[in-house]
Image (cartoon, rainbow, N blue to C red):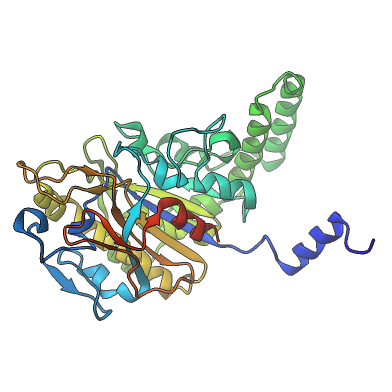
Length: 387
């Protein structure tokens, strides 16, 4: 029979650039789940105990209104798609897992479902050997899922997120060691490890081999450390993003605006997926004060700066941004001026990636408690991002 052999097909794909394009995704996990009806889906016709304190403002897209405390996002709404009917969380338990995988933690295969970043790491590999394909900017949190960058699951440790937070940052530069000495050390390590591989049935050793290769690429190039070095950025751009607060908010994540800028620099350097975790939006009490005073202004600044920057740099066809939490919040405000867990419907926002923006997808009913039009499952959004 005619046709091409596998080697010929792979060579043809390489020549055509198939598999080598640098598409990238930045995911902002809004720790603890924000109230959708106080951001992108205000219900001004609902009773006071449902609609809350915030007023809507117009955006630069006629007919789309969002919260008054998000003026930065209002100015760039033509570059965004608010999602008003996201669903899929089965229980309303705090876990970032569904945001990263599009799946629940129930009925998992052995090893667990892999996150978006790990899956892309496996399928696409590094775009540049000096930059990990999957980078997680979140530091550990008091509640472990709040600090997760997304887990590798059954794909194994070699496709886990590279996490530059903390002491690892100081070990990314080679000092007083020549490149050939590093290679010699790698070869020696390989000899020590060789006898263990045959007895290892878990795949851990092969994963560690991949990590060693990745570490050598990082150590022998300055590309990653330069991407993480914000002092190299234009001061005006740094001012546009702002600083926020690098300290953790309760048992959640920092409200670190420099992570938004770092994410953009990382995808420019070659990272395929960057995740960052922001704040702690679990306001069972004082919801409106918490949103207004501690979260929305900084979130609005960081996210609007990131999206606008991506478009200004011509990255919008290749870089997708998504920001969301694990579920929505109750329509009715509780006796402590808070909103409780509501897994039936939540919201989010996406931008870039060559999507048709400047439109809203989905709708909820008069109270914001039930989906009225176009249900959007977490997995459906991730499928779009994979595409």
